[in-house]
Amino acid sequence: MEKPLRTLIAPRALEPERGSVDRSAFFKPKTFERTDGAGKSRKLLRLTEPRSARAKPIQIIGGGLAGLTLGIALRRAGVPTVIFEAGHYPRHRVCGEFISGGGLAVLQELGLKRKFLDAGAREAHSAVFVSEKSPSPVHRLPSSALCLSRWVMDKLLADEFQILGGDLRCGKRWRGDVAEGSVRANGRQLQPVENGWRWFGLKAHAKHVPLKADLEMHVFENGYVGLCRLAGEEVNICGLFRRNGERDLAQNRLDWLRGKPGTLLHEQLAGADIDENSFCSVAGLSLRPRRASQESELSIGDALTMIPPVTGNGMSLAFESAQMAAEPLAAYSHREISWSCARQTIARSCDDTFSRRLRWANWLQNLLFSPLVRMPFGKILFQSEAFWKMMFARTR
Image 1 (cartoon, helix red, strand yellow):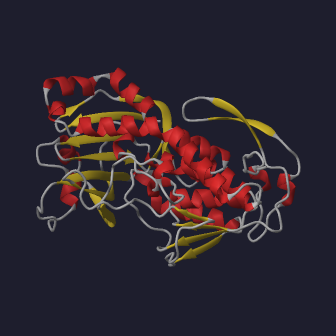
Image 2 (image 1 turned 180 degrees about the vertical axis):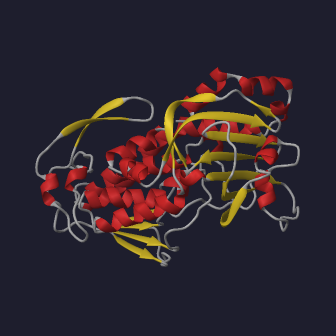
């Protein structure tokens, strides 16, 4: 009979040195409470047993947010873990660089939130939404968020994983099947065309950008651009765009981020000093919600499903899905449950947590690209404090 699962996060004060695991972290049982993104509290039990000398290894394919976070949690549980990452650190990634919701609780549990703040993460408390030329009032976020560059964040997580004794293989692509003991965390599933549209994302950092709030979202007919404050007076500019033909993209792609002349975004970025070395792009994005229970592989983060970026919840989904996978995978590694049980447990957790969130996010995404938004009713909706509070809550 398979044993019940337990949470596998060792106390931060007992983090092991590189290449070893401090078994004293697992000797005494300790019950604690965790609050999830929906504000619900549940009691959890820390792992108390020393790791098995026969622990099965876990291979993680992809060293992004989800893969590195899972690797850190597994190493805290004494699980031998290898991450295969095709790239190197530090690196820029197309990302809103905005963390809110349940992901912050995951970072707190892993002792990473404090490290993010020490590395220069800025707290965000306000947001404004702009439909081309019509801004909403500045809204106070229902709960604070964190903004940190992926250039800093990914390197910090990679270093933490290695300090805990994890095996990080940069410049290495996974060549095998995603079979037992392997987790896919290598980013977005590519979809060249979806419902007649081609989706792509662009990102760059800039200075000398005046902001009305800590987070700004500028919405246009075929895209939207988010701005958020980073350390050192930098601003992250990240956009999602769509096209339904073979329109020329050879033009300066930074022009897509700057917005059309006459829009408030274009005016704000007129004097911006854009760091072209930070510019990056990604194409072939799929925004169709996926259910983990319908997938043949064990996937987390964007490799599982991508939530529309307008929600500002993509990074949180990566952290949350990594945490959900850590407990069952450690139980599998310690030979307490089968691989099938671990995979099914993770799939159920992800579906139960993300399904409603993804439905609301998909509804909001469709609304933003509807002609309704550019009509008087849509503009009134954008001005509504109650509407944005509701959407913030429903997409977390």
